[in-house]
Image (cartoon, rainbow, N blue to C red; front, side):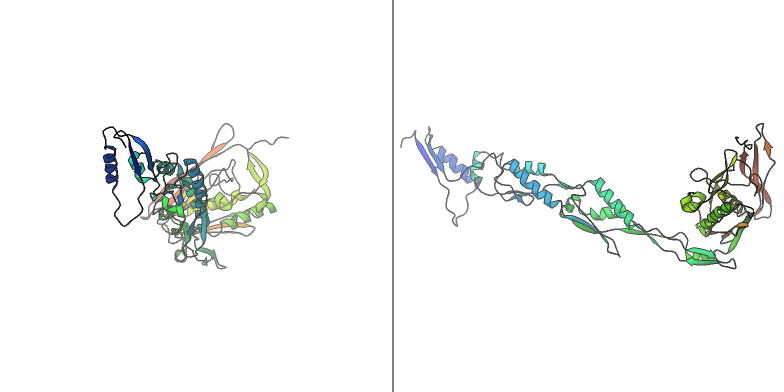
Amino acid sequence: MTSAETTLDIVEPVATDTPRRSRGFIIGMTAALLGLGGTASFVGLSYSRTLPDSNKIALGVSVGTVPVGGLTREEALEKTRSWARERLTDAITLVAPVTEKKWAVTTGELGGRFDLDTALDAAWQIGKDDNFFERLYHGNKERDVMITPDFKLDSAKLDAHLAKIAKAVRKPAKNATAKMDAKGALVLAEREQKGIELNLDATKAALLKNGMGALADGEKAELVVKEEEPKVTGDDLGKIGTLLAAYSTDYGGSPRNRKVNVGLATKKINGTLLAPGEVFSYNAIVGPRETEFGWKMAHQYQDGLVVDGVGGGVCQTSTTLYNAVIRADLKIVDRSSHSMPVRYVSVGCDAAVAYGAVDLKFQNSTDGPIFVGAKADGNRLTFRIYGTQAPARKVLSFYAGERRYNASGGSSVTSYRKVQLPDGTTKTEKIDNSSYRAPATPRR
């Protein structure tokens, strides 16, 4: 063999108990061998260790639990996609406290997604930047590298699912209810019940306590709920025994259908309880006036005319209640006059209602709950308002001032309330202005 011709036979050593040579040692020895002879060249270079295939992922690399070593990137992508699809069938289970009712939804239904592209980019890059000797050293050795793809849920879908559960969990608090006995005394009809409401923020925080990635394997968490206290309790009702005000109107001469409507509205309002600060809405309590709910056709005002309409007569209940509220010294929130004066109260002392358009609202401005009792016996319509104690002010009267007429035949009037203050002095307060149009002439 000449100095110009040097053949190196590099053979993979058989495993022994001798320590493995360091990477630096191998590189150094190789360099030394190449340095033998100033003009050394490779005539025959043979070795049993093969270089890694640069078109495939390094051996021993896994993405998630999927071995992808020795695969092309496309092959690895297909294999990990199957793994991801199977993983997205894992369930996240939420359990309600006490009842232990369960709601389960898969991570896929919540928009779960594994970032396979980024994970495969990282897997592909392993070993690609090695130099010749590093690649020679690794050869066909398995590297034992596991790359975990990032996992994320669609926050909007998670929120929407929690909102559905919140709706199912929700149990409104129930106030205690009362009724009038045959002697006119207020008695407890039903005790209060606490409500349950899902605490969305706390439930979501408990679910994500270990991060969104922890949900990739599914999860089981307990719903966080909060109790809702009723506004009126049985103890509160026991304190209601003071009649704040009462007012009656006559409807004995009304046609049968009108009497039915008056009685139906009265029944819906009777027994209403209002907590301190709570606002009463006539339309919310009485509801829409439609024939399917039992309302009848009867006379009512419309555009200055008397016409038949479903629910005709309900304005007498709103007006009678309004007069009781004024005398109970409660706060009026919303009130409108009729288009024309009514016959059952003085001008300026009426209160019109029309579902979806005109409402009567008042607020319980006392420090305790109030009870609204109502009775319609076919002749007299009566509202009684009870509270926990007599108001500090005493309403002496409710009346309208001088009626003012305009050129078109319409009129307006201002109503007032005269009250006695705690010190015995009296004062007059303006309540509202009312405007009425002239009666229209029916078309022939």
